[in-house]
Image (cartoon, rainbow, N blue to C red; front, side):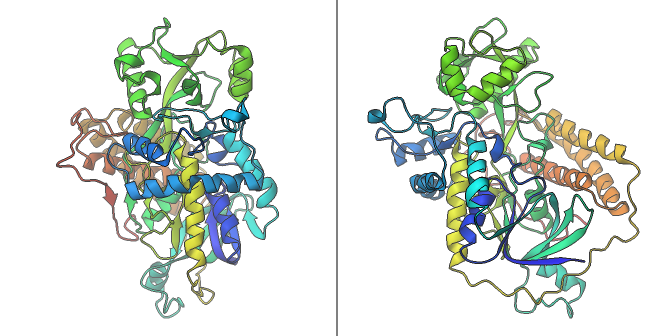
Length: 547
């Protein structure tokens, strides 16, 4: 078996992974591993922008206050302050790398064209039109990363983390793990999608930057790659997983049979779009005084209720009061996509539905990426740092990735890295596994996991729904595990295994929170409880528990 070596192994090529790699390459050899092409990531699909204090009318205190308010009492205020206050410096860094943000029409009144999104009391969202994420990826991949001494492996998918505890358990005398501690991450097993080869990467530090897991749900704004891989592999290795009940459903995903996972940015509502029913009647004022600019959890639940009351398959965004010229300049990508489907935003209502969008929970991690397992770090959506609490404030995610990637590299740069070159990683064992001739089983299980999660663990939950989901996911995970053992691994079985594992984590977390707060709403406990309920939901299972 081929074994590669590096000092820092970065899993994922979104903004968290690329910025981590850029900072870390100052301190040693960096390898980026990504399961599709290097530009395919959740970042690439981010439309809105980056929330950051850049205007004299704004303040760090106001941004912190808005974040805490959206987070419904579960944010770590120290983490929030640290990330918000580090924002301007990181924005300046992006600009030095070549990113150009949209400028305002009157530079004398502020250089940037700052957007406003739900939950924000100020205009503070920097953007590059409605393709901010794509612009970031292009700048980082086209310039900075390409010019750095960074190795990038595309179309390679991680199977599992390799830890010293697991190695020593296999052969204590031969593992070569002496002096590295009780249980440390020392790399990964990975599958080359093109050749089918399974190989290992040995690394002193492994960074999870694998993004979220929207594909756990039937309807999502996320691309196909978002299968919760980092959370699942960390859980299987025994790393604590935190606050997985808080899944953000974006209120406005385009509802059209030919539009797969196309998001209608919240920035439309920031520019005056209203949410209306089929008759064009606004309804959000009945749910919150902030109307269409209420936080996402409130808006998503309101839409869900309106659809159930009326039996309608969707609601609508109305931005017809804006001119074609304005819409073409501010939202060119969204305008073109809608027009290609016969929807003229300047004249027609835009059909929308909520869809799974962002994981506020994830691998328990400090603001500098440290997890409970030495040698394993987490950055970006895969991590739960305490910034988002029970509900993410719009456009805080790219900010978190920028700041935490920098702080993590600063921490690692000051730490002596252990010598893991003497660790002997055993050959990948296939046992009696054979090539699969029953791929239809994978497709059925894939659909069943996602449908179960959507039907029973969605925007509105109940004890009965969660118990049904728990039974179904438990049975499905047993079937998937047997399939994983019987057949040679493929990307499809690895992704199915991961979404099923993440589904179980979400269900268990939701069952343990007996209140409604932020993104977790249950009919059996409809009120927020600040007295009896715990601050965080943390799942700690021993390494190898899933076997």
